[in-house]
Image 1 (tube, rainbow, N blue to C red):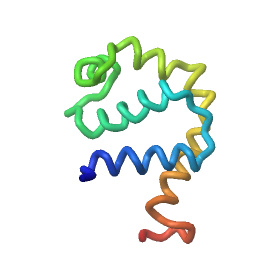
Image 2 (image 1 turned 135 degrees about the horizontal axis):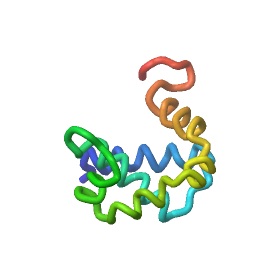
Image 3 (image 1 turned 180 degrees about the horizontal axis):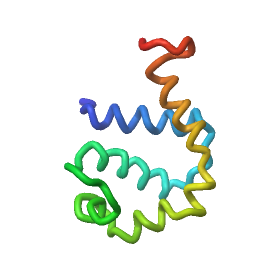
Length: 94
């Protein structure tokens, strides 16, 4: 039985594949965890909070989203791929 969280993770994984973003498996796992943490963490979200609520330490999140790594990802392609999953090719809500 798929939970809502499993479906959300599947959607995100498909979007990553569709966007042709070159992500390492370890970064992809951390990115999925961060997306989930954004839904779960109350109030202010920062690396310290992620370390408290997530399965990694604060420094792992800091290193994963460092300046060099965040610039190497084409965030626009990833976001467009996610948007296409929900809005379709015509730009309308399904």
